[in-house]
Image (tube, rainbow, N blue to C red; front, top):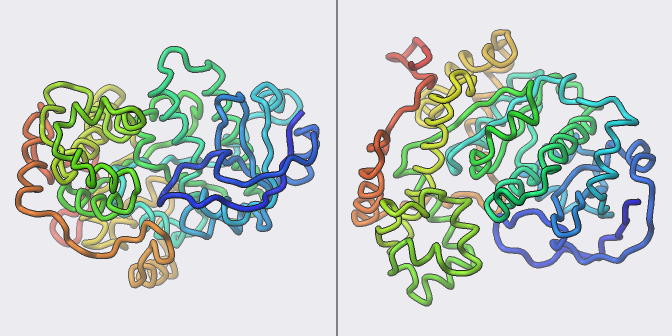
Amino acid sequence: MASVFSVEGVKNLPVAEFASFGNFKLRRTAEVDFADYQRKQSRFLSPYSIDYNRRCAVFVQTSLSVTQLKSQTFLYQAQRDHAEWVLLVPFDELLNLGKITPAGTENKKKLFFLHSTGRCGSTLLCNLLEDAGEMTVLSEPDFYSQWVMLSQKYRAQLDPRIPKVVGMLTSLLLAALDDDPGAESVVIKLRGICINVAEKMQQSHVNAKNIFLYRNAYDTGNSFLGLLLKLPLVQMINRLRLDRLPVYWLVGIPGLKSKLRAFAPLSVIPRYNRVSAIGGASVIALSWLSKMDLALELSHKRPGFFLCCVRYEDLMKDAPELMQALVPLMVGRELGGPARINMNKTLCVNSQEGSDVKSDGLYRLSANDIERIDQVLSKHRVIKDSDYQLPNTLVVAGDKLLTAGA
């Protein structure tokens, strides 16, 4: 049976805090059969997170439908803001849904996972994709992020049901979009750390396609620096001057180790973690390089894993023309005139307006920060430049021709 809780309030949370059962102030009210409950409330009931200690999936029932929630910048924040009820659903009860409801809901829709380095225009790209029509975007459902954190913490001891649990959560999330006329193709934008489990996600969603978005290391680092300085943990590290320590010392600090492993997996490798963490630039560089390294490895290990890669710089150079190349790859049709008009309107507004992770537009990187970023990149066997271009990147050739970089 699933446990139902009424939401009495939301706790005061740090910027960009991961979704969890503990985000809410709750009062337990009832036990219900989840299959029956889900059938009746499917449009307003959506997967929020995973409570691993209880071996339960966490669902929220909201005052708005999932189709309405998705219009907000981040789905996990919209779920949190509009939650009226929270349900804890045991893994076994969740997985039993596959025996009593049609399995593989994602197979009825074209599903795309948008991976990225983070802070690289993914929200803007998603808005442009919706402008194209016949596509809908879910921005950062957070149970995928938890798969990363759990994998880092438990490794080989991770509950083997997790891939199937995540697959079922995806199916139920997509089923909640059945009233959305634009949901023939669904793009799920992920937090940057999800590239760590991209291959496992593909195994759980065999028909999904993947896209990777990235930006040069300097501008990514600058944008991340502005966000990280808002976080209490980073503020404490700076206040205690722990950022003066080499990265390998930070990796050993309890409570920080798992976050660093997820944010920057290369930080545990000796040739990378001997650099100083002063100012945070080297840690941010390790995060960017970790994601780029994984994307490069997947491109070589599994050719075609990414439908394509997209650079933020090319997106900003001529977004409508780049989208004219990207959209046919995804849905097999050309952009129409209205789509181009809508895209030009989208480019005139801040895609993260109203969000607590909105960039303030300030440039914070110093010459020393750039030197530390270069020092980190110099240690990689291939990616030694901030402007490195991944294979299969859509590029602007001159000012008019779009090709796929080999």
